[in-house]
Length: 342
Ligand code: HEC
Ligand code: HEC
Image (cartoon, rainbow, N blue to C red; front, side, top):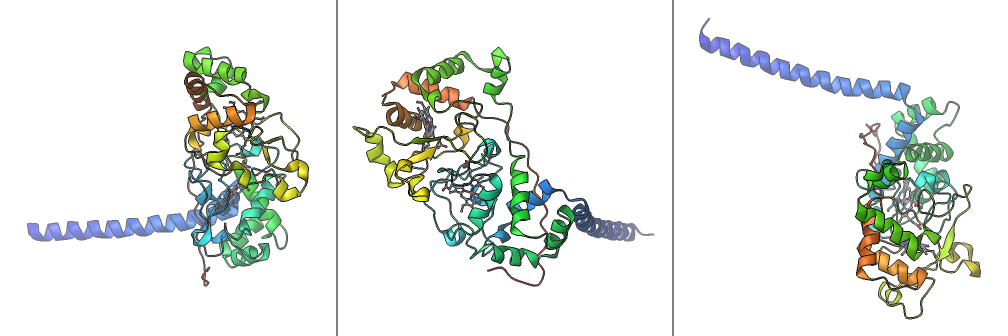
């Protein structure tokens, strides 16, 4: 055989190999996917839904669009962009450790993660569905979801809003960050915090931040699910230049929901875990930097003007509350068959 022919044969064998390889790998993904639907558990189903933009009216926005679990669990925007680029009026809080909060939203209007998850689906500027029926009807045209819901929640009509919200909430309960330097310090590792961070922790307590930001999540005392720990924000408005600059009181807080005068400007005390990852700050996302947020708090909640050293010290401490973001793998989503979402 001539050398040219040998080369030609080798090349064509290699090509066949590549083609064969490609088709096996395609098959494997599809086979794995079908198998995974047979064994799918509630967390995996919840994760698919969380990442699936087809939950929104025009298939453009997923929960992850505004609560990016690869990056601090929020979107680092002042206001999130929902369908057709519409902006809401509040900043997106992180989903990390939301499972530990006894009420959800800045004003605590949802009593649990499950109830919370139903909200964005029918919020006109977020996912934009007319009602929950519309989402369920759309997902019901995706055979993979029908099968997945059946496997996870046996029974008839298992693809319903209650199960959908439950699955998302179950996935969100895995979004927990652990092992921050501060946690290791609390568990007895004296070396986990630097001297500067320890001093910051002392300053944080000493100036009175812990009168509201206490407990494991710095969100106040642990209350039963559905009961919130609320405070007026800003508490001090007299001579408060920050209120003038950032217009916090444009938003009436819980009052907007309850119409009860006592709820005027009341907001839930938020967690401070991973606060270094979730700029910008406050319900209206008006403050870009953490040091400015600390000054705003001291003035607005404690009527104190902190000096630069105190501010810097508290910021260093707050940064020690950044935990390990749990590794995420992308879910494979069931294919759309024979319809277009719009
Ligand atoms: C268009 C952006 C957007 C989308 C899409 C969105 N969210 Fe949100 N999310 C927000 C904003 C903004 C808030 C705060 C609203 C408020 O407090 O009034 C919020 C609040 C939350 C909270 C409360 C956290 C806390 O600390 O109180 C959770 C949990 C949450 N969203 C999960 C989800 C889930 C699950 C989905 C998908 C079903 C979703 N979000 C879709 C923007 C979005
Ligand atoms: C009287 C209660 C109270 C005190 C004292 C207090 N806070 Fe707050 N804190 C709140 C409330 C309520 C909010 C939510 C404000 C809002 O609606 O934007 C908040 C928000 C924050 C935020 C922004 C959170 C976010 O996700 O955007 C930071 C940072 C913060 N506080 C740090 C501190 C520090 C540091 C101190 C001490 C100097 C302090 N707080 C003292 C009640 C308090």
